Amino acid sequence: MDKNDTLFEFPCDFPLKVMGRQSEEFRSIVLGIVQKHTGPVDASRIEERPSRNGGYLSLTYTFEAQSREQLDALYRELTSCERVLVVL
Image (cartoon, rainbow, N blue to C red; front, side, top):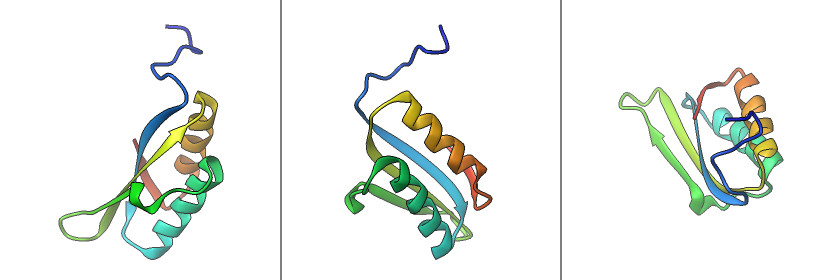
């Protein structure tokens, strides 16, 4: 597969999962980064799941992805954020 090949047809709905330590700051920072790359995110398309002990939080944002470049830039910024532990 060529590096420019993609498994997605754009635009498409894309679920992005971001995990970090549970805090309002984490939520706010991640939402800001996501909206910078996607525009406003409908709150009904954000899913929150706390860890069993409540120390960590998984946020899933489902949005309409426009291109591979958009996704790559979003992943780069999220993975460079020290508050973010995992991006899937």
